[in-house]
Structures are given as C-alpha cells and as structure tokens.
Image 1 (tube, rainbow, N blue to C red):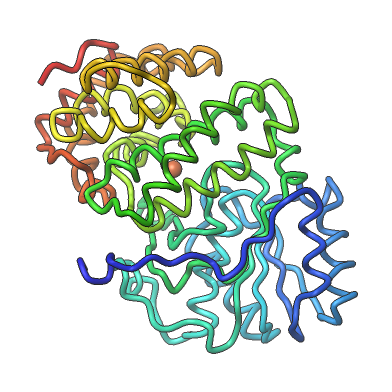
Image 2 (cartoon, helix red, strand yellow):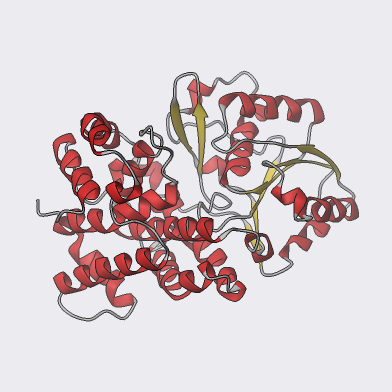
Length: 394
Ligand code: FE
C-alpha cells in the first residue's frame, strides 16, 4: 500500500484553453464510445461539436447517454455491456463528475467482463487496463477534477453505500480542460465546486502522503482559487477559466497525495439527513475551517505555509487563524452557511444520528491520510462544533 502510493501518476496529455475540444479532430483511433450525463452537454451544443470533430478524425462514435448523478453499479454494468458490443478503442466521457466516474468503472468491466464489482472495491487492486481502449475525459464542472484523478465514486443503491474506487489504472490518458464547457455552470454550482477544489488542494497539502511532486500543484491551486473564485461565482468568464485550471491542478495534487477528514465528513453526512442532500462542495466548505483548527495540532506549520503562500504574515498560529478567517470570509461571499444548523439540519435528528455518522466518517477511505488521527468520540465532538459553530478546542 505504501509503495503503491509512492508513485506520481497523471494523464499523458492535458489539452487546455478555450476551444481545446478541437483536439478531438486529431485523435488517432477507430471507434469511440461517448459517455454522457443527463443532457446539458447536448443542449449546449457540445455533443454535436464532439461528434463533428470525431467524424473529421475518421472515428466511428456511439453514444451512451443518461448516466445519472451519483451513478449506480447497474449503470456501470450496462455501459460496460454496450462497450463490449461496440468494441471501442477510445472511451470518451464528457460532463460533470458522474459520467466520467461511471465511464472509468465501465472501462474496467469492458476489459475484464468476468470481474465483479466486489473485486475492485479494495483500493489499488485493479487489473491492468488499456488492453482494449484508452480513456479521454472532458469535464464540464470545475471541482471534482475526475479528468485527472485515479478515483471514481459509484453507488450501490441496494446496499445504500457509496464506493470510492481508487487505482492509478483509471487515471485518464487524456484530459481536455476547455473552459467553454464550465461557462454553463450556474452560480451555486460554481461556488460549491470551487470550494471543493480548495478543499482538495488544502487536504492534499497537509496529507500524510504529501510530497515534493504534489506540493507545488496544491499551493498554486489554492492561490488561484482565492484569486478567482468570487469573480467566477459572479459570472466573470475569465475568472471561470482560471478556476477550471485551478481545480485541475488541485486534482493532480490530491490524486497522488490523497485527502483528509473534511472529505470523510462530507462523504458520510451528504445523504444522512431527512431534510435533504448536502451538496459535496458545500459540506466541504462548511467543515474546512473546523477541521483546520482540529488538525493544526499536528500540521500547524503546513497550514502556515499555505497561509504565507497567499500573503498572510505572522507566527504559525496567527497564520492558521487568518487562513480560517479567510475561508469563513469566502464562504460568506459565496452564500455558504457557517454551520450545519444554519444549513437546515434539524437539531433532534442531528443529535440522534451524530454518533453513528462519526463512526462511519472515521472509517472513511479519506481518514487514513489525515495529518491528525481521530477517534469516533473526537469526530463526534468535531461534527458537533460544525453543527453549532462552537470553537474547536480539543
Ligand atoms: Fe471533493
């Protein structure tokens, strides 16, 4: 496991810039399957563009449409079946995180039909891919960075469990990071995905698996999010473009350094309450300052590095405090609540469920690389601080 992590893997090529989608004209291959989500890419005309470019490249293309948000094991198996029937040498996934995540998992079952979903749940245990197809990802949102990561989240609805699949085999071969696609994001999604990207970069920087390879990517991403997210949220498309690149840099960092307990908490609270789903990036944004205060006992100097890289001055402790204040200030600008209570989670339900959620969060795949260990009892206290907005002083 440790040896497997001492590896730095990225896509072979990242094409970026307005109109980068045109790279598809030069793609070499025979057949491509284009995996899509609910239809926004079609409505905005990007599917027609992709089809025209691939035609110009002499590539025969088949569509696999309607991958749902939080894609299911069933959708993955259906997609793999479609791939086995069509036999593409390129898998092209375009859209938000969901179609790209789903296509990554389809890829495994396309190449290894006899494999079971259970067999690939164990992180970094995938069979060797690229025996039948290569993978190209085109993101339309600026947050998950799944176009450059070794991760895919698939939901088993029968069991009610979200499985984070992880293996460098599913790091795409090519990413096309074209900001024109991200221009279609509504403001709220821009805020949430932007804070998700900030969380990726900060958690990667303080992760126990941080490295000289991931640090510069994380710091640059953090700098860019602070510079561009408010304007991008406000509809400034030049800032939106920079955010599209910043989230990609953050993805390159966390794909190799992994994450921490902000993500553990977001994963396990996202669908836990009857009052409705807490969007992933929104949950991260709420938890991030509380977690920094908790982790600072073990990672103060690393957080101070982050603060100094964005121009904050002072002792390590002053820097950490100012960094948290700055995140609070951005959350206010982005209309993100400061507490779970303010988000609308009912107090009685929170109290009833917090112990179980704390236990699940400690067991999340992201907890292992958090800089400070945490027990279920401490996690319960931390979540309680996030509910009421009380000071983290343990
Ligand atoms: Fe995330």
